[in-house]
Length: 237
Image 1: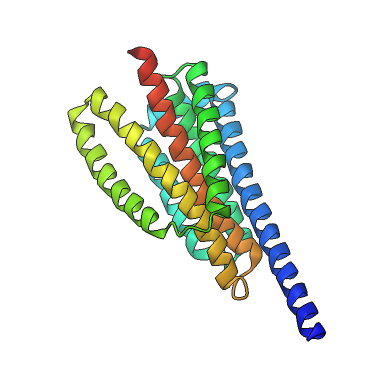
Image 2: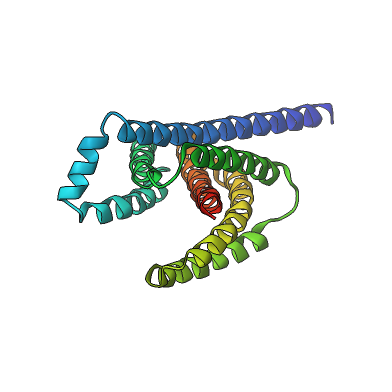
């Protein structure tokens, strides 16, 4: 009995230690991606502003490539990171760099105060919901499924609004997007914890951490963009 108890205790400690290493690595990769995006945006807006604006002015079609390339890279990370963690990490950083350039292109219509307020708000909301999703015992899968369905509907409505050009609708959609990504952040945090506990013996810790970092990074930047639209449009009103 004593041997069984001791062995069982050691296994639990090992599992907890492994989970903590995974979470530390996942959130570390996610934080690094956010910092890379911030640095990329800063460099684009300052040192390379003239070159970047001139390039896109001469090649307007490249704007669509910049918009679509992160989607392709994100898919590449999701499908390959567990088999090739190094390649997945490189694609994650490339995704972060490109999103940083995108942020720089849209930042011109917002004030520094708008950007700072959006970043602080998204960071606070993200941290709160990520912690909640990691520690809660409540199953969030049903809420996550509803949020995903709402996100698909919102994307379709947003495309329609691109032709309507309604600022009021955009403003409302930004609040809806915040609610959706609040739920998705908690769900993704819980989901990655469960994936590690169920499949860590079949995949590398580094690969799973990169996949999780990508998902949480996307949640964060969508929160940031939504808050940025809210603060920017509120100030104009």
